[in-house]
Image 1 (cartoon, rainbow, N blue to C red):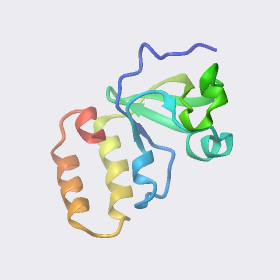
Image 2: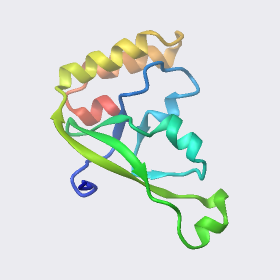
Image 3: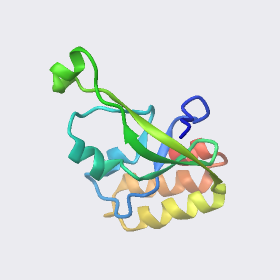
Image 4: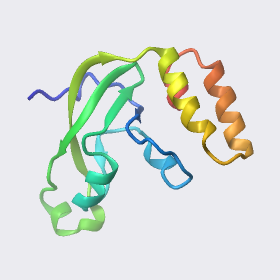
Length: 132
């Protein structure tokens, strides 16, 4: 198993979360490979086996997590564990990523943020613009 930390380009979008809602929105985009919680159950529910797309359109899969060491293990409230990823050697097109995101956003409750988000995605010219 190889890790591709040096190749992945942040931010990344978790494309495995099927039902977006107000509570999960903060979990779909992340800016590093650290999981800031000591709970293995939460990790398995939020990240394990999820596919992510980086800001270049490359697809990866989260396959595990490194355990905390030193003082972070003693104080779980300061947990910061590095996720292990696998390069799937696949890409998604910009159009497909836009379509995927729009389909999920359309299902969210209506508000001003939702409408702005939809417009921003439609106007986006890069993966990074779509993700953030």
